[in-house]
Image (tube, rainbow, N blue to C red; front, side, top):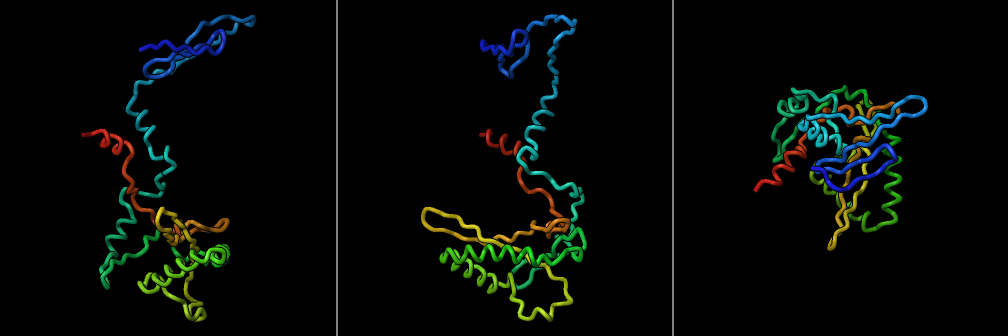
Amino acid sequence: MIKDKVYKVNEELIFKETEFESVAGGRLRENKNNNLSCYLLKDDNSVENTLKLFFELESLGIKDDPYYREDDQAMNIFKETIKFNNERYIVELPFRKNWKELSDKFSVAKQCFQNLWQRLQRDKILYSQYQKTIQDFLNQGIIEKVENTEANIHKQIYHLPHQAIKKVGRVTTSTRIVFDAALHQTNELSFNDCLWPGPNLNPKLLDVLINFRLN
């Protein structure tokens, strides 16, 4: 198992390469204060735990929400409220906090739109694509135009910022609208903060790697 490569750190410490990992070794020597320099290796045979730690989603920067529970409130709300209407499925938002705790986010949304508007003015093609997408949302009933803001003054209102994401391809350039539900002001809740995240639907990395090696 031991290979030929040896890395010398100093007169006392060396690292020797093996089939598995480098191991530390060397010679101890006493100094004038009768203190000893000692190098130790921790022997841990728990390979399974080591692999599990290595392949955890946290290593990818993805971490399950601490509020997620086994009985999964989001899935319960989904099952209880889903219905089929006008050739589409409709389901309620899975709130875990009272939506009245949300502020309207008007100032944040306005600032985001002003930045977006400046970008659209510089890019006429993007402006045309963005306008077409908004109109398509209106036609499909995904969004609706608020004609009279005074009539809604006593209703809870939340402004959802949005931005354009351009994907430049070899043939065409596609544009999609992304709504930013994670944006929030200091010491205030975002829209995502008030929703149950639901179960993590990403496949487990270790399962993917094992399946990749099959057949």
